Amino acid sequence: MYLSRLSSLYSRLIAVWFIFMANSAVFAVNSEDRPFRVLALGDSLTAGYGLPAGDGFVDQMSQWINAQNLGYKITIMNAGVSGDTTTGGRSRLGWSLAGFGPEGPDLVIVALGGNDGLRGVNPKVTRRNIKAILEDLSGKGIDVFLVGMQAPPNLGPDYAQEFNAIYPELSEEYGASLYPFFLEGVAAVQSLNQPDGIHPNKEGVAIIIEKMGPYLKKVIEGQE
Image (cartoon, rainbow, N blue to C red; front, side):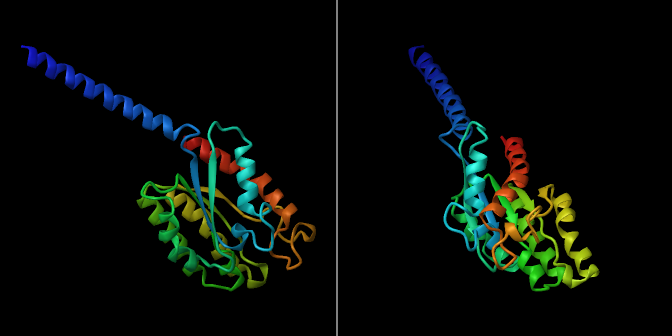
């Protein structure tokens, strides 16, 4: 009888322990002890080409999003590589994710394609690469914030129509949140770009954050 009661008490203690640990895990994910982790996979626009530390896209977005008082810290890992195409981004996705360990990031910002357009890469190639990235992330259960690009006007209307359709169509196919155009409000505005006319300056990045930030905030809030 004594052993039976002891066994029953032990079983209850084990059950209570598991409940405690489960609740602790949930608390850790939703508290400042466990930041919401974001991977920003992109090219020079993401990397902050030509800008000092603190002025680039990831730094300014990190500062902005953490000022929104969401109740937990948000960290953004800069996986932007200047000059990268969708082919390059696709090839390094695996080791970019590996930096987060087995859990992976909570969200991936996919902001690729600008250099594909500048180089006149066949839109079918661009589509195939972005589709593969979304397929991989979807298979891992990782949510995506897809940031679109637009084709340069000098490549003609046919190219632009095929290229520009990639982002909204793949966003719908994979259920990814979409921000239509990375450079909205900044493209072709001389005062908001560096001398090359392509990469935004500090003020240009601030405009990008002002416009894109609320979209990202909604995505993050929806995942909590």
